[in-house]
Length: 198
Ligand SMILES: Cc1ncc(COP(=O)(O)OP(=O)(O)O)c(N)n1
Ligand SMILES: Cc1ncsc1CCOP(=O)(O)O
Ligand SMILES: [Mg+2]
Image (cartoon, rainbow, N blue to C red; front, side):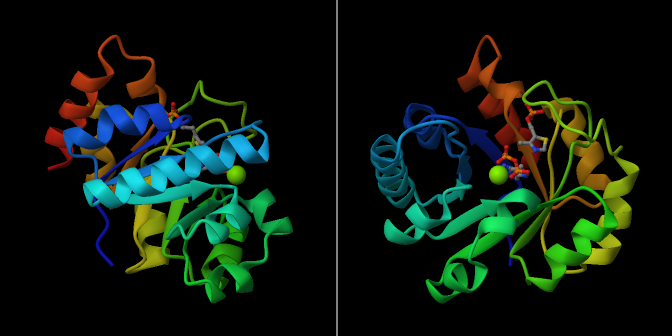
């Protein structure tokens, strides 16, 4: 499967309203700590916006709502996997992206036949506290050799300047959060990302 090479992640559907018209074709909604009714509103609007713009929406964490709302993709981390019903996700026809940080996690992920594998943080990230400091760009080549044709997503501390190196090292997709959301000109940054990712 070929995924768009640029994969921004946002924490509110208002970002999708701003960024999808610029040409973003793959986006994750990563919302933490919101009540279920608010999540339902956000995810429903995000689903419809992505349909209107021909973009792929990936729902982070909230796999039951993603099923209920007819979304197409979910992203789960290793801790999410402890709780998630992957057969139910698959039975509902959703595609699945999985986080990995070491070889044991990668083996667990590959056993679930994911639709992409993410490796991170490639560089230090300021978005959240992680037990993994930085994986380094070289690990992308090791991961690519292990995942084969499964798309490989590079995440963590990525920027437009660092994207080329990640692609050269084997990433198929590069994901970013704060490089966009904390930028003085987020729209301008997204346009630069779209340029860099072709
Ligand atoms: C593309 C992508 N890669 C990794 C993550 C992190 O997922 P997870 O480990 O479950 O952590 P949270 O994002 O849920 O805090 C991701 N969301 N997307
Ligand atoms: C959610 C997540 N998972 C691994 S790194 C990361 C954070 C990415 O954010 P940023 O692009 O701002 O470093
Ligand atoms: Mg998660």
